[in-house]
Image (cartoon, rainbow, N blue to C red):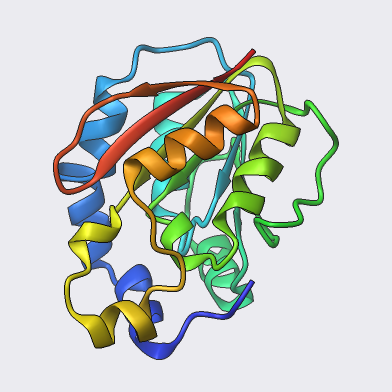
Length: 191
């Protein structure tokens, strides 16, 4: 997995992300989801921990492990005064350091497009989520990146919603489209 360049790092670690996530992007997605009795949740690509904190608020009885490849982002997240049920770890989403079938649910929010081998990251999510568990993906479709230079140099993983649905089904997930126009939302249930 490649490190983020300076532009990517600025966007994902900006405090502006907090407000965009809370009111427009992930907050809206999270409010749509029914409350599930999850006891353990994994998040990949947490950045400075904003999405992890929203998960901790929605699922106060769950143990949440939020990961990111970038050690600086993880250190920043650890320095915040986030919920007690939220733990931050440095981890590569394509080689997760967790046991098989460890989590009830996993979330990938605006992360997969940063990963060259996003199929391997989905495979790892499938491995660590329990049978009957859920994998939630919210990301940007490749059609959103129309500028050739930007696409080639700033966005390692490009895919459509249908690409992710096919990959999820390849790994045995029952995929459900949860909507979204500019940011798509998917749920994969591990059967």
